[in-house]
Structures are given as C-alpha cells and as structure tokens.
Length: 369
Image 1 (cartoon, helix red, strand yellow):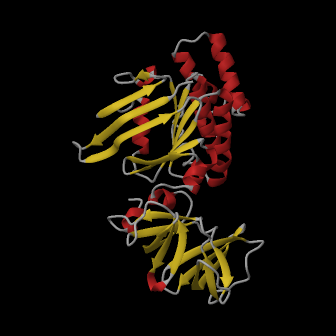
Image 2 (cartoon, helix red, strand yellow):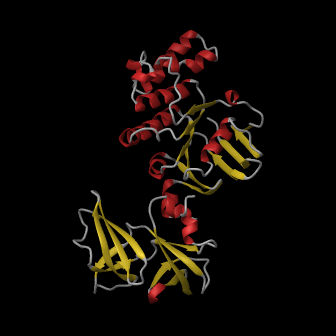
Image 3 (spheres, one colour):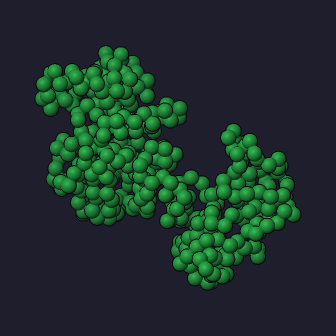
C-alpha cells in the first residue's frame, strides 16, 4: 500500500494569473481513506489530477510510495481513477469495462477471468455482467466504474466527486459501500468531494481546501470539535458567529463584550485585552431558557421562526442587540416555544470557538467564492 506525499505543490493557469493549487504540503498515509473537501473551484480536482499525472505541477514534488513522480505518466503510477461521470465505455458490457485494464496490461486470460468475477461480485453486480451501461442505473454504473478501477490491482485509488451525479438516496448508500470495499482490499484512497456530510461519514482524515490552499487537516471529529480556522468552522457543519471585543483575560478564559452591552465568558488563550474577535458556536450546543430564567452566559432574544425538521427542531432567534442565532434541539425533547416568545440563549462555557477577527471582514472570510 502506498503513502502519498505532496511537497510545496503548486499549479497555475493562464500564465500564472489563476493559482489553482498554492504550495500544498500533505501526507496521505498507507491504507488511509482520505478526503479532500472544499467548495467548487477551490482546486481540489486540480490537486487530484496532479497526483494522477494528468497535469504536471509548476512547482513542488509528488511522491507515491516514496517514489518521485516528476515525469512519470499516469499509466506508470499504479493508480485507479473513479470519475464523477462514470466514464464507462458505452459499447462495452459491464464485464468488458471491468476487465479492460487487466486485458490491456496483458494479463493471462485465467487471471483476467478471476479478477473480473471477483470485482463484479464485490460490487454485487456479477449477474449484470452482460449489461451495457445504457441498461444500468446511475448507482450501478458507478459501481462498475469502481470495480474497473479496482480490477487493475492499483494500490492507490483516486475518486473525483464519485457520488455527485447520483440521486441523494443512492449516493448516501454508495458512500459507505465504497469505503467498505476500499478498506476490505487494503487500498489507499483519495476522495475529492464538496459535500461535507459525505466526507465526514467516510474519511479517516480530511483536508479542507479553500482557494488553492489547505486550511486544516484532521479527523472528522477534530475538524468539527476543534476547527483552527474560521472558514473550517463554517464549512464543516453549521456555526453561529458573534463579533465582539476581549474585555478581560483571566486564567485561560476570556470575557467577550458583544454589541448592545451583552457579554459571554468563553475558554480561550492567545488573545489580548481589547482585541476584536469572533465567537463561533454550534447550534446544537446552545440551550434555550424562557425569559426570566437568567443564568451565566445567557443572552436575551426573541424567537422569530420555529421549524420542525424531523429529528431536530430549529429555532431562529434575534438577540436584543440584533445579532441572529440558530439553536437546534432534538425534536423529542424540544421546548414548546413559538415565534414571538421571549427567551434566554445560554452559551455553555467551553463549547465556543474564538477566532481573531478576519482582516478582510467576517462576511468575506466566510464566503465560499
């Protein structure tokens, strides 16, 4: 199983005017299911094509299994590629598509037969071996595409938005199946997606990209619970953001003064008194109390909208200082509150993130453009 190392990798287009990949350093471990996550246009597909050898970098190096890839063509990199749009040969049956790689590599017929059968059985489509792509559903075609990539015996699997062309239910089911198959075969996988729920569900680790750069690498739990960048807190899951100034620094916590003479005490370090900051807090950790039930770190406001969303109930609240918050609660235990009700929103100590205020402003920093 190979590891993949990217060292100072850079790729530009249009004479350097567009920087698609900007000095990226990354290490994907042996046998890891690794996701590259980011909004459309952030450079993640370009990064995958550089690893595949479809594109050559302007700067930096790629190492697969410790071997430098500079000048090595795609067919000599020991990779299997699963495309977003299936990319099956329309004039070939499922069997012919899956066995195409081994056949062009000149494998013995007995080995081709064995691998073709194993791969089709692995994806549960051996009984459709004689079907042409036009006779298969989207989910089936993507399974055939996966089987074709695996049939080559490649130890590194690259997946470029493999589920984005499928309907939501099939994509939801197939994401777990792809991970199971890759892990069962002991392959290393790099999976590109813009869907944070997809990445969180299947990845061992995730690299969050934005505008050609990697902002943070970590497990799904690390990225969700301990985001190091305000955009990561915004893009992974959902967060509320409140602007304020550090009024007091004491023993590892901060008193943050918000607009309208409201304040909250949060855990934090590395900030200075008087510094402008942004507090990020997940909707599910906020607690609601009826007006009058004041306690520490509670902010007064009015419910503007209540939405029942099945598992959770969502409350949209306007604080008395005009800031807006979203609070979510499990529907089975949600409080019987209605629009217009006065409430106190409690920010539990230790559950908020504190970020320095972005130089270009909060709205611009959160933009996916």
